[in-house]
Image (cartoon, rainbow, N blue to C red; front, top):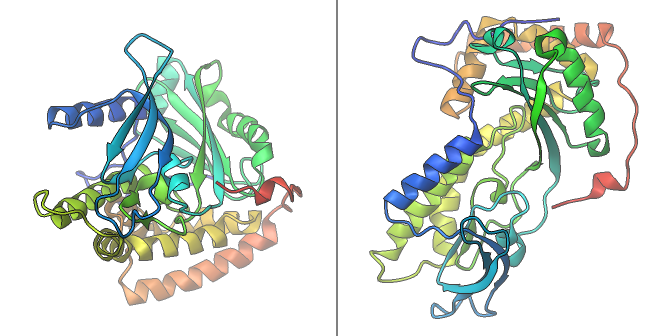
Length: 352
């Protein structure tokens, strides 16, 4: 079943496709223009004083390799700092240093594929999403336009060892639309499945993927990474009162963490439920695709995605949608093919 969605978008609304190599450089250059001091380096370890939660005079020591432009060998260096905001991704060294705890994770695999200009025209205003246990047992596959090429990928939590099998399947599903394309880049990244158990410890705080701020269903993380980074920075700067004092753990939790959870906690909860309901088996996926025919579902989905808050406040339409959902699930389970069986009891217990 194939469904076109997007008719409910207004003329000034669109779903943007992001190329991180372009966006990241823009953000880095802008930060430098505002006065940030950039260091081309790789943090290898962090020394955390035993009294960092109670002693304002204690400092954290960053151990890192600094790389000069054009060189591959780093120079070992250290830096003492009063406060750390960890925006260093799913494999966060800051999270490990502050004993933030572990989380379950998905593997997202993507191939950047250069296709002909003629084939690229199809994706000029189009992004594709595929569901089925052939492309993922618990997520979706995608073909997203990236200016002059497409990103083709998939992801999974429950069967990570089979990610290349699922990647082949999404290429097969895209079929002729990407036929003859040249793979120009291969990317694989861990994607957190939930918040870290601890996001603040002393004067160390986590944001973005390091904190676990990736939504279910869509797998989006870049907006929440940027937003949480800004919220953390603004809260900490305000608490420092112009550099007169350092914030405590309790103050950071009471401001940044509480404000973020109040703003986005319901969104994470609802999307987690939806993913468990609609991505877990082929019957539910059949129901999910059929529901996407509904203009109300499209409206609520895109409004929620665009504005990052759970939409849908029309009780009559919500009640009608509940009935449609039950009907679609019954139908979906009746026509769906059985899900492929797999087992990986050891690997599935790995955490980051």
